[in-house]
Image (tube, rainbow, N blue to C red):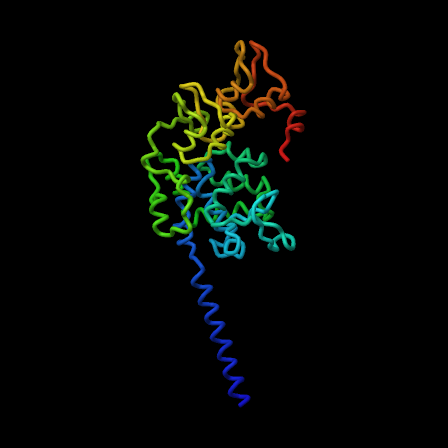
Length: 333
């Protein structure tokens, strides 16, 4: 009798092990499937923010084990972003230290959107946006330099993933304004209604591409029309009003003058020319907007504090020299 029960238990253990392995296999995703699933959101986010689609995909692949890591499966966190004051749900996971706090998302796409928000709103990553948007090697090295990861080979790992999987082709598709996403929001939701139920405003749809987009100082912009506000532009270009307001240093209720520029991407650290001669009544905010240069960089290049305005006839630097004292004063955290 003992041998019977002992043998039965062994068989049950083996069956449970097989079932467990089978269930895990069903939940896993291949690298090719992962790229195909998230390439469109990477392209859409590149068009909105300037972060190369190749870099976003490579980071997601590396940080999440192409969607199969514990953090990706249990917290929908595909970029290894820690809490850093995050007000949402948290997932505690041992990484560099025991029980570190990581951001937890309701679904994976939110992780991709938050990755964009993370890089575009932190000063230590600001210099990355001076690189050409398809220069994935510079971006990979810059991310390592900025401290995104502690692995000294982080840049090489990203570059290797991009080149082995030809992820750079998605950068070219994002830069091609005539290229439409292979899958619209409607297509994605039809495949998986639960996962894509609230993502309609994040995808570029053909009927929304009606206004000509220009480029100045390597920043995409549109010309303002009567009635434009951050909200109307955000709806037209499938982004958030807060981003439009932030890119243009506006309040949420600001109404631009018809014909003025409305930037669709963050301003640059440098202007397109070396100098600007100040005209009567011009402010630093107006000059910053005219040349697509970040206001803080304009102040820093000219050894000015934020409470100062230029004098008429003054020659402002838009490129080159940054005062040493103000490099320290306005240094990135």
